[in-house]
Image 1 (tube, rainbow, N blue to C red):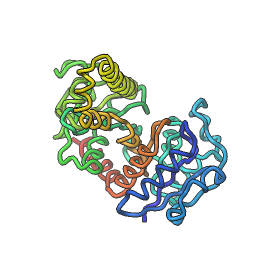
Image 2: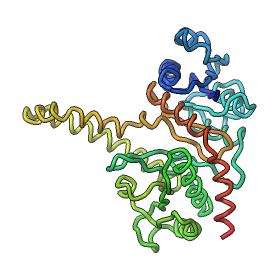
Image 3: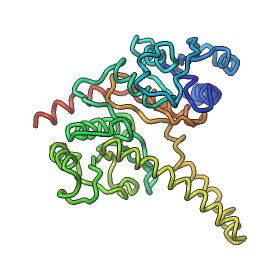
Image 4: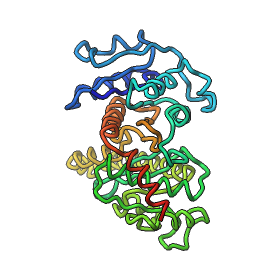
Length: 332
């Protein structure tokens, strides 16, 4: 069975939603797996139902790396839950790590302690965006690398293609460079250079604009972490605002309320599609072992889906594909 290490203490709401998410994942999964929960046993053990205790081992740890600390201090905190969870992967006791704690600390520790895939300069955080057709597009980087060179963007395209194909099951993922216009001449000097590097890949379709992320015209969207993080936070804000606007206008109009009752199922599906919890977490692509970074406010659904995502990642040859593709397309 696969083994997943989980930082049980790192989220904004403590161990409650994390332990509940782990139990829910074990309950819903068709195949069983083991979980190493890193945290305070006094706050964890009693939350685990007896029937699932044989699949869960608690790794005692009471030092929590808080959200307001600097990621650069993570290496010094060898007794912290996130450090210990990542060490379990490094030592081979676990095949993946899932954390809703400090994303910068998780990223830094995974990169330095687990190590990068051969040929990868910088790992990237990827996230899924819903499309108008019910599908998903993968955007990377969304925060790991604020300043990028064209070579880094090229690597993001290769890594994103491998993830979309191997983990998400997209048969022939289309890669696009996020820019301020579709024309080849648009973009910064760095994105133009990256465009030239990526055009040797048969799945590269050129520049794409922000609206293309949501219209199913591209599967993998490449950008630096500065642009990607703004895109991610803006999208979350827009989705939240739309939901609030719909509710506000429904309350103002009796006829709208009647229509809303009739459209209740549609609204429920819409909410589910734009809810980050449905995607679980963001994979850090380019490190040697699976690392899933979850939102600090993750609920049990998000943790469950993050664990499912980790299991899917483990069962692929994504890192081998990344390594081989980098060699192949760099040599052209």
